Length: 173
Image (cartoon, rainbow, N blue to C red):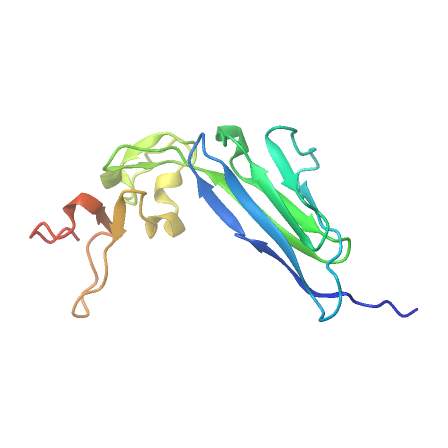
C-alpha cells in the first residue's frame, strides 16, 4: 500500500512554558507542508487523557495545518501538564510549568513554597520535596536573578546573584 505524505514535519512552539499563576499561555502547532500541498487538520489534546477544559483550554483553528492552544488563567493545578498536537500521523508535545512568584532573594521549591536563595544547594534539604538540593536545579537561577559566570578561568562561588545587585561595584558571585 502506498501512502502519500502531505507534510514534512509537525512542530510545536514553544515546547515548554514556565508561567506565573493568573497568566495566559499559548502553544502553536504547525505542519510544514510539501510545496503545492495544503496543510491538513491538526488536533490538540492532553497527554493525561483528560479532556481539554472549555473556557480554560481552548483551540483556535485546526484546518490549514495550524492550531493555537490557549491556556487561560494558569493556576497551580496546571503545573506539569503535557499537551500533544497531532495530525494522526506525526506528533508534537508541549509542557506547561507553573511557578509562583517569590520575593527578591527567594526561589520556589517544587511544591511552590518560597525558600531563601542562600538555602538552595547548600547540602541541607530545606524544601519539603527536596527540590532545593536537586543537582540540575542548582545551576538554575530564580526569576529576579542573573547567572554568575566564569571570569579569568575562575569558577564563581555561587551560581546566581540578584538582578538589582548588578553593577553595584561589588563581586556578588
